[in-house]
Amino acid sequence: MPSCCGYIGDLPTITQERHRTYVQNCLQSLLEYDDDVEIDVAIAADKLRRAMNELGKITGKIRVDDILDVIFKDFCIGK
Image (cartoon, rainbow, N blue to C red; front, side, top):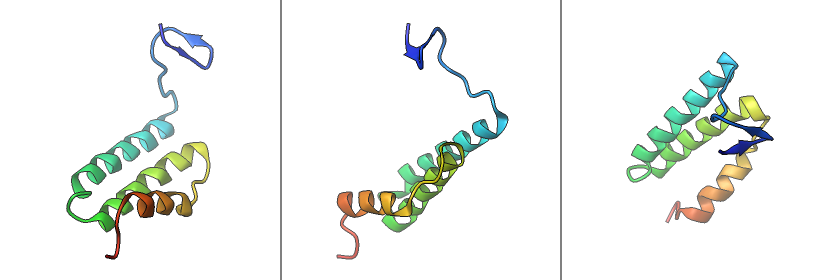
C-alpha cells in the first residue's frame, strides 16, 4: 500500500472545501495550458501562473520569477 506522510491505506483526500476548490482551479488551468502551449506560449504561460497561484493559496506564496525562469529556460520567447 502507498504511504503518505506516515499514513498507510487509501489515497489521501482533500478534506477542506476551499483546498479542493483551489486544486480544481489549478487542474483546470493546467488543462488549458496544455491546450494553449502549441498555439501561444504567452497565453500558456499565464495559465501556468494561474495554476501556481491556486496552489500558492494552499502552500504559500510562489514567486513569479520561479515560473519565468522555467519558461525562459524551456521555451524560445521573443526570437
